[in-house]
Length: 322
Image (cartoon, rainbow, N blue to C red; front, side):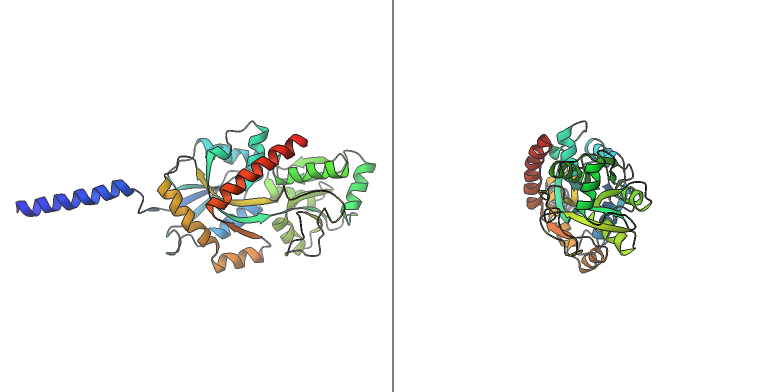
């Protein structure tokens, strides 16, 4: 009997030692939450729900991911919460938007920077586009700029907030065209900004290509230009701003992906980094993203780290110049 007890004790010690050494083999053991810092119905929320829909599969995390919205101030409310209050235990993920959170941290007044978060993987790259109502008198960016020149500061147009991709695109347009525009940030994010265009509350708007794609499919808007280096496959008929004579690059393209708070255990980061990009590659995910006009651009953790660094350098230079 003593031999049996001794053997059991040795086995238990070995098991405990393995558990302490590893600590996170069973992760995740319960459902995971992902914070989206924009409202329900906008592009980030819409896409986040699609790319996480297979999380519960055995070949993914084996546990579902629930989306929690914390909108406000162009993403600042959610990211401030995520940086300062979210548990760094792997059960609270966050959706990132670049250039948004990086530009906001450069401008100041927020509790986060690239050092506050650990990237996991990128799922999409969504260019900004200039939209007007379906019945607008504007049919090209030249029409828009001519109006702005004739009516300084009176061309009202909406976007998802301050120092988000939409705002950066607007600042670039002002500089490239030599005009003064009346940018109106919407506290309900991209969805609210698009509704303002459709309702005629503003003369136009800068929005996400994916939101604009769905709005155009419904017959609610015209899309006059893409803030990117080349035309997009979802709307090959829409020229870039550069094609229309404005020296504007792709600094406002909205990269979206998953991150965790700084301090999350490395084994959990490693498991997420290995699993999440493969989850994004699921055929059902790709099909639903395509149907929603949402361009995918899958990147690994290492690729996102490099992208964040490069974008931060670009934005410091761009924002200083603007």
